[in-house]
Amino acid sequence: MKRIVLGLQYDGAPWHGWQTQPDGHTVQDQLEAALLKFSRTGIDITCAGRTDTGVHALEQVVHFDTGVERDVFSWVRGVNAFLPSSIAVQWAREVAPDAQGDEFHARFSAGSRTYHYLLHNHPTRSPLLAGKAGWVFRPLDAALMQQAAAHLHGTHDFSAFRAAECQAKSPVRTMQRIDIARRGDLITFSLTANAFLHHMVRNIVGSLIAVGIGKYPPDWMAEALDWRDRSRVAPTFMPDGLYLAQIAYDSKWGLPQEAAQPFWL
Image (tube, rainbow, N blue to C red):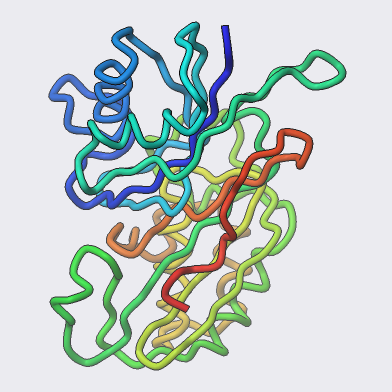
C-alpha cells in the first residue's frame, strides 16, 4: 500500500462544508467520488482540517492509502477530470515513512494552520466579491484592530471564541501570528495557530471588527479572552471571506506546497 498526499483547492460557496453528508453535497464527497471514478476502487481520505459551509481553501491537504498503481502526477490530472470546476487537486506526492518509521498523517503531522479572512470595507457591497469576501460598510481602523489582535498572541484558553458545538477536548490553543493588512477597500486578516477551534477565526474576526468600528477599545480584546464566555463577545462573522490557506508540515515529508500568501495581495 502507498500513502498518497494531495494538495486541494476549492471554492466553498457551492458546498455544504468539507465533511461527508448523506446528500453527498460536500467537498469530501466530491473528492471521494472522483477518486473512485479515477482509480475504480473506493478510497477513504483524511483531511488536515474540516471547513464549514461557504469556507474556501487555498490549500487543503489530504492523504489516503491505496494499492492502485498510478504515476504520481496522474493523481492530479486524472482526478481533476472527474471533479466539478469549483474543486481541483493542485499537487500530489507519494510519502513513505520517515527514518523512525513514523507515517505522514494529514491532520496529526501538521505543525500549524494558517487562515486568511478577506474583508471588503466599503459603504456599498460589491457583487463581484459576493461569496468571496466578507463585507462591512462602516469605516474600519486597521491599526486599532492590530492592537487588539496583539492580545491574542501566545497560548490561551480561547473559550470566548469557540462555537457551542465545538467538539475539541481542550479550548487551549497557541496563536503564533495575527497580521492585518489593508489595500484600498480590502482588508486581510491572517491568523496562524497550532490548531483552531470550531468557528474560532470567524469569532475573532467579528470581535476585531467591533474594535475597528470603535465599539470597543483594543484592550477589550484581552478582557474578552479572560471572560472565556462566548455570549459576551461579538457574533460569529459571515463565512464568505474565510480561506484555509496553508497547513505547515516538517520539510522531511517533501510536500510541494504553495506559499501561504493571499493571492489577492
